[in-house]
Length: 335
Image 1: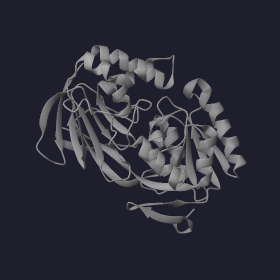
Image 2: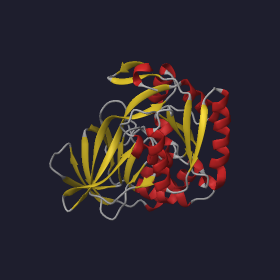
Image 3: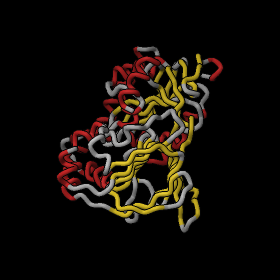
Image 4: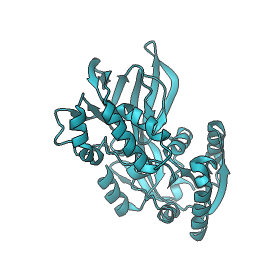
């Protein structure tokens, strides 16, 4: 549907409004979640049909095939929106093609973390998610954009992300959580957190903020957020707002196992009031970071090695979210 036909207005300079959603492409990986994605896709299809939304199923098992399907859907004028049925990794794949196009993306949470949906106030329940998609309420958001650097030169290799870029202990937590087969979901992340807190390793981190002089410090983790959480709701970038044209940077200095364990609840909720001597949170326009021997993750998926630079792709995101009052209440709560 064309933007002119949508009911558009602005909030904090970001367009939002209701569009008519008549036909969507549903993108999913039938092998994900031990086949759970297939049953979830059938469920969301049935729910959308109840709301009068025609669903074109699109199944792919490889990255290349998934992105090809996304490009085809974006180019089809009869498709009003793309919908992912899966986790943050699948949504991240689609965002690589969808960023900046203005065609909305709906999210049906079927992954381990589902932090992109959380950060945008999108319900995790399938029926509620179907209502959100059918309502057609669309908002433009920022995205993060990571660009690789080799020998001091920026490379063509880059990656958009909708939630958080993580490097340090959080990267190791993410990798460990993926290896845990039971329990799944947020519980897997919690067990991974306990294991990594017991090890509590640090690494040298070199940062350059907003083009300033680089400086190096020993750090437990570095997180660059577009939205507030990763790992199934860990609010490491609690000061993030996906519609402010900024990135939320969180750096955690070396911390003892005892202090980390004692403050796990506060870390999960994003309350760092008792950790101000350890946790630094600021908003930035860009940040260059280097953390040797660690592969950062974006939206829960492995990225490329550092050094890399993260910038804001202002207004490049486009998502179907709950209508205004619900949307603002949820994003205020989660961000």
